[in-house]
Image 1: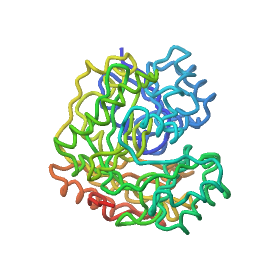
Image 2 (image 1 turned 45 degrees about the horizontal axis):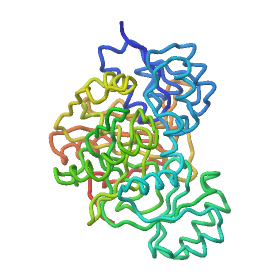
Image 3 (image 1 turned 180 degrees about the horizontal axis):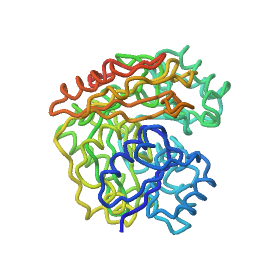
Length: 423
């Protein structure tokens, strides 16, 4: 009997997951809450906010799916997995206890410290005056991080004391990140190149996916404020057999052992943000879910049925599940609204979606249908234009060729996705 899957979320990550699950001969129906205009081509979308834990749990009860896949971090942090599992429905996504690895940066830093996993030096502060008095403890630049969830935007790299004090004021007095800034982490600035490793994880194994590189800053050459991600490519040009072995030995193995020692029954995707330094890889952050937009480039290269992997994780037998990847190269370029990651307007008509190449993929991140059936912008990150090629340069060229075919008022995108930067 074919499976019914409920996907929670409505961004580019969830569109990519729906796209991959729709390829499975074992999937009969996909329901998405709330979904978007792109996901609607693959799934039945229900107008239920992913952040409304009670409403999503009620939807799961009424739909009775064979599997629930939770995409965003907020419902995971709010204990949605626990609520749905209590109904006897398998969930791909960590429980509330494990979700603290993303919901609290200080929780993760203590975990890394306790288990000897390389990371930057840090101190956590809840008192603004104390933080200001110690603002130069690691010199400048310094990384200042809101402790809680901030949609991927709660990190400021302050180049000077003046910038750092302004960031502290924004976080702790102006509360630009809300309660996430009640505690702020001052962290040593790591120099190197950033990379991302997404891993499937359960109680039997942590299995890395193919590598990817994300671009957080809004402007070319890694300038401007952090965003949720302006593009990715996979595999990372930084990775080789030596680096992969270091990541396995220094990070993945002690993380898995740490989960067991701390009683963290992690089931889902562990996203590890890394800085590749002269001293080897160091952890910048842990996330509890598929990265966005890393997922858009990584899943293009997965040959194994994604449903099989999800089910293996929920049944705690990931260690016996074969996972195969192809040798293609993938590049995803995010098209965003003017003003993002700050204030931006919605409701702009998107044109050119029907003109993209047949072998290009356009994952919708922030879209909705207009009254006449037209597709409108509905978020800061609007589309993830993704292409696959036999070489990195081919994939990159195909992605940008198709980006240029799509227009909406105020559209912005980086022109350097796929270029390697070191900081």
